[in-house]
Image 1 (tube, rainbow, N blue to C red):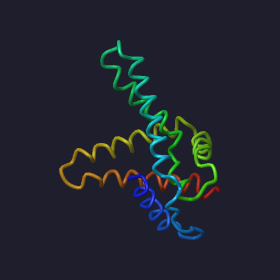
Image 2: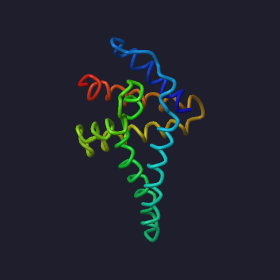
Image 3: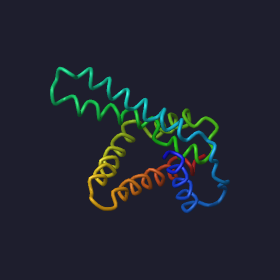
Length: 148
């Protein structure tokens, strides 16, 4: 799943800016990085939910917000992996703080809800997902890649 998504990102980045792109590295550890990224996000969301467990309806919003507060730190991890960044985790963290965590969060939340809403459709459930991923790739290209 993660290697397929990474290849899709590679192809989109190549379409947006083909100059200087090497071949796709199928051995970049996409699955390990994906499991690490989403594992950390889910653990922090779960801990937030547990911390709010006595507050009824506040549990879900707290868990979702915590998930995305964590996720923004890995926002550009996969595009950086595709581009062959030497320390993609550190580079993603630096990118988040260069752009600003608050700006990242308020940009990502609507994209994420759009992506997730598409999964509720009867047909073409992944269309919104691809559009959201493309939005992140374009953002990466303008904010990070063009400045490397």
